[in-house]
Image (tube, rainbow, N blue to C red):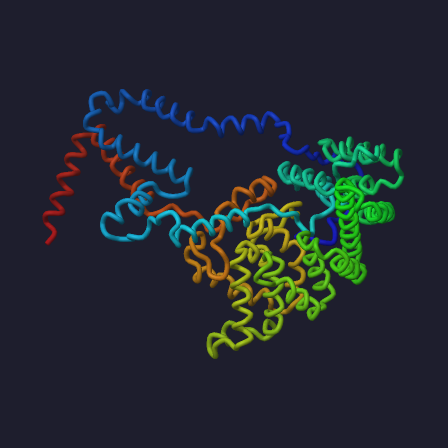
Length: 536
């Protein structure tokens, strides 16, 4: 199980971790090209293979002679193949969809299933679709690790790349948004750094950062890049971030004095503010990883007071994790009271931390046997309801907290309510659940009860909007290929596909045996009919 404070000692030599420029795809090796080609031509290969098999068996199966007799088997097989293809492409049975959408209204059921544009039901559907689109937005991971000091060390030890190209591409876009502006051409060092953030090759980015420092020794973004990618330990990263802080504060004060001169100067101030906040936040994370937790908490609190408009950076999630490490549960509750509000976006950190605090009050004395005899107390009911709320928001988290699935390094971006967010939360918060006696036991006993309250999570939620159906696709882009992505809800083959498969298989088998052994099958049919006729 990976630990949030570090990844252990690694080898001294390492290959660089590539990061693509925005909009560019990484070069594929021959294995990837072959896999992509096979995936694109899979249907054609299966079709050609099927035709070849039929041609090879045309003589022993006497297909030409028995084509008329085998028409029903052929049609059944085609129906089954089409049903299987339709389910894998659209996630639903074609026969079931036709029955529900077209046949049931004709038979008098579900008259209101088709809503007119502008009707209340249509408005609710459009509102739900807008909410699903917003929930499928990819967010920057508030607790993302350091590339050089943590992600690359993992690559040194395991030989696996923990970050996907899609994830790194999003980070490259973030860096250009946070650390560049239209006035970069006024300062040569910023011009060099603007090109550096677009570089795909890490050595080229690091070389550009040193070039920027040669032009201007107070280039804060150059120190940021070196701290993120060249530093191989948290100590080295903290040293570089302190140099970046010194340079960033000087530039920020200078931009404040000139902010009202022109719109360009206002844009430059916004950029310099982003740089300063980023540096302070990473310094707080360095202090947290090095065990100076109270110092980290102070930096985060000062940041939230000094820059309150930047709540979208979710600094409060960093603060929650540090306060939990200090076991300052009253302070954690105070933070939750401010950010666990109906008007603010939720996250796994918010929901599961609220559940943890309520679980803490009853978990040490909780026993399933005792609860089944005497019933749940008010405090236990509150704890169970908080767990159900958290599980409804992100149903993937309990599998990692209960160690039913192995953890990997969290990505640099997460999808709320998705598997990527569950990994990011459990990676840092598993230790806090283990620290509270009985918390994981209560979670294990109650978390699956959530699904009884939401039997159709994609259609209707209990406390939140329906679970977005786009999470699986986005998580597969964010998470490395060696990780088995958790899917919710599980896609099970509907009854119609099972029934069609059994019917087609049995019909084809009987037809094949009849064509091949007509005399024996005739005797068998007579015996079966005779046995059925003798039954009372």
